[in-house]
Length: 267
Length: 368
Image (cartoon, rainbow over all chains, first blue to last red; front, side):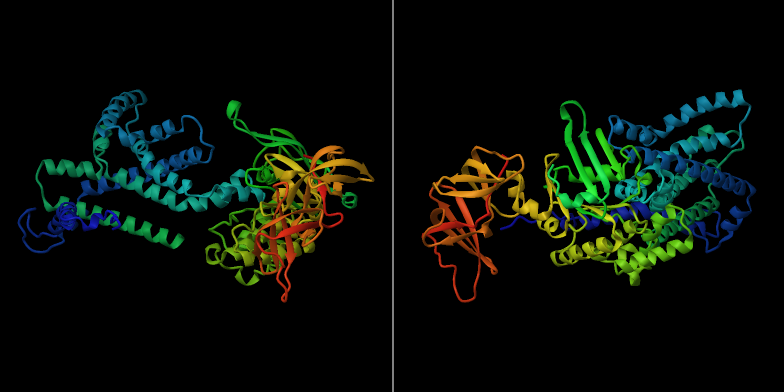
């Protein structure tokens, strides 16, 4: 008798484990979203449906301030990181394999491996000194820090896209009188677009979400939405935090869906 | 290199002079091309033929500019282009994988080269429809390249490369991805387009039949060297050495002794003792032991007589003809190809004794 192929789906308990995993992943989020619409002050006792916490958060100037700051940092950091990551991806894939390439990949991706707290402390030490020397303590430092840890996230999808792209296409462009820049503009870049968009979105969300590095690097009065929420939770927990988190969740779902739709249309 | 005299009146389109191309360095260095010299004339359909790894594609890439020669010069109408990047060379390539731009339509693909050359919109539009008409793809101009078949993609790739009116068109095994019937059609199409455009075609293939049917001249390559250059007729009927004779078509090798040469025709004695006359490969042996080749269709199996004889070992029916495998008395195998008739069998069965009668002028003495 032929040996049957190993099928994980048919193993006993598979369905149960899967169900449990999904429950752990999504139930708390579901609870959070539900209580964002709670009419009462409590995050554990249901007091009827209401959107008042959304209104409250919307009209809270501290929330507005933090949200705006988060957005500014995320946009700048994601744009710069995507630009740098695109160049890095092209430089590391559009050449013949060379010694030290693996080391270079590791080097570009190292922020993924180094514990975030280590980077945070290191940046705190360096930036606090730099802030004194330069006399500048604006958002630039936060943008710089966010850009740094966003680069590997932007780099991964762009590199994956480039590696899946036939080198012959660029060769064909060159054969048809395209200078290297024209070949890049007219062939490589349009084909790379889904990778670049994915890289940008990933970087954007990662930046928007960051707590640890922001907490260490920010100057006084530079709260982002996540650090603001952290500060709130230390005091009293109100459904306002749930409302902010829910809005955050909605934003990221819109981003991901939008990206998915763009990508599907393109390919 | 043997060159037929008739072609020499035309201008030289491409000349490769003493090309050496090595990949890698030191002990791992691979000599992909070893002192290759080729002259390709204007309007010629020139084929680089050889098994994979013989260096034919490398030579094509050197002409296109995707690689640079280690040594030697590549002249395009007398101008050395060996150091120019591909986008500065007035040659275009049809890639084996077609390499159509997936984000552009058929028409946009064809227009690409002209756009890069900075031609006017009106000129581009006119040329694109002209070339699409040439390859019979006008109806699909607005299609995306993932909405067309392999054969159609092949035509678009051809149109795209022809659109800028290159001085030389390079074709890198362009038919290898097509099925048999389509390939046959495209062979004829390609010849037609070459005749209509008057562009010099440099065609790379490993398919000897394709090379024989399409080419004006063929360069047979092996292990980075050019073994013979000549018309399909030259290559097939007058192979210079064992590799060429073996690679192109089926052939019989006979050991022989060259007795003497008169007027370019050698007198050779076969192991059976029979003496036949044979043409000599250029630079071939003029005296002593040599190898003689005879194509299977240039010999007949006979009941009595023949210059050589043996026992029928196998009879293979092919529809149009029958192959009779004769084990000669000296132990060598000789295959005879006979045309079939509807009313008669070939007349031989396994185990029969058979003589082999070699046609006059059918034998060629190899160089090696």
